[in-house]
Image (cartoon, rainbow, N blue to C red; front, side):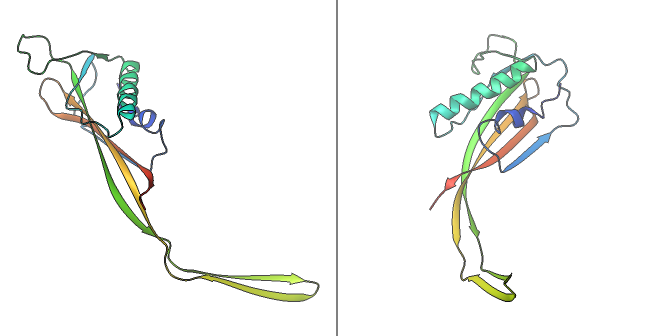
Length: 160
């Protein structure tokens, strides 16, 4: 079972992504994994987006043959543990960028006369963007080790 495409259909479907980082434990096999449960979900600031993200992840894992089960993490009843736990975390940071100055030169030829024009921009334009990152992690349900992690980032908008 290949879970790498999860991120691309998951997060990019909802917004245009700037950068995507994916890390997989190459020694881990997803073969035979049938169940998952949510664990340690740190909420996105927007409750609607939180439900949307959970829905995308649920749909993607179901398409790969995994069934979501509910687990009470404090339950010691001996109920079987899920094969995988899903965790998410959202964060935002500010990024400053600058346009810098520029100079252009244009030449035209009209009715035998040559014309030259110049244009310049002076000074830098400074912009500050808010960059949002969603971390999605899959943790093995038996030995509690991280086996898959993805972090897409996207520009949330101009922060100024």
